[in-house]
Image 1: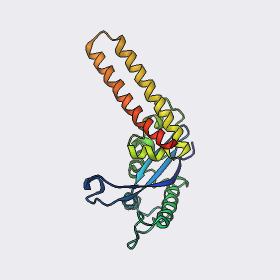
Image 2: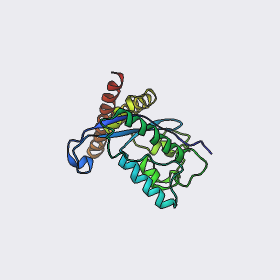
Image 3: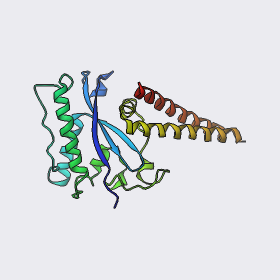
Image 4: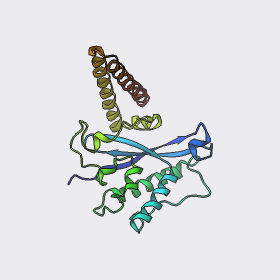
Length: 220
């Protein structure tokens, strides 16, 4: 059996929502924890708020019948992580320890749940073992995980040397996909085929553009 994926929270970000709908009805800034999941052939970043961790903890406790082995850090009613770097760092360390206590031990009960996989944006059939794939060519779990995609998550990934390289591979893959689609469009004889290939090339180029911007930010 392949080893479990390596999971960490190397950094945090402060997000200021542009509308109240983005933050559950509040326009106040909040802290995002940049969860990095490292698979054998690639890595990706998922951003979560403390409230997301709290919802995960409650769901896992309900599904399994007992709480995960590591306690979730308590909510602080007197301080905000937005204004307290010390509290942010303390909570980052505690949340990373919480996730690792689920992801790494032999007891798989909590990570074999759909709630855990949804929290980490893993495919539903992963069975909790995110390291089970041995190929990066479109089969297995690593081929099913989408590009990091969201602008803020891309920027978070670009700030880490390991995930920066994974973003760079995503960029090269998107450019290759665009070239293939353009070649298919130029060689097509039917209008529908040309339109479909052109649209595929445009999607790939848009994805490449967003990745390129994040990579440039990471170098800066």
